[in-house]
Length: 75
Image (cartoon, rainbow, N blue to C red; front, side, top):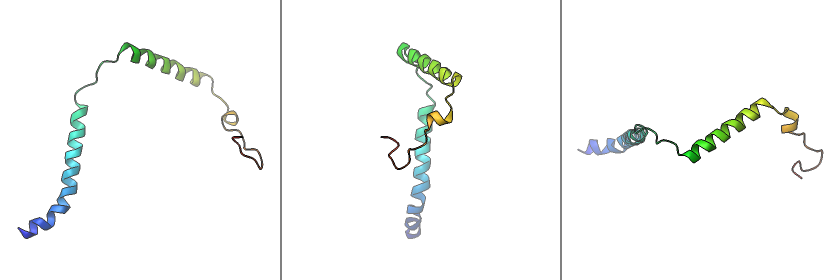
């Protein structure tokens, strides 16, 4: 019995991790809820914004201007 109590702390971590993984996986098996019309509109807006950004790439120099010497680049 005394030897079992010595191994109990060593078993607590893997058993606890397995239990947490099982509980997290259980929640993902339910399937997603259908999106509301507001969510669908927002998703469509974001997708069109992504497409617009992909169509007109901005050169690297315009995205990341060189810092001014001796000054704060944000100022």
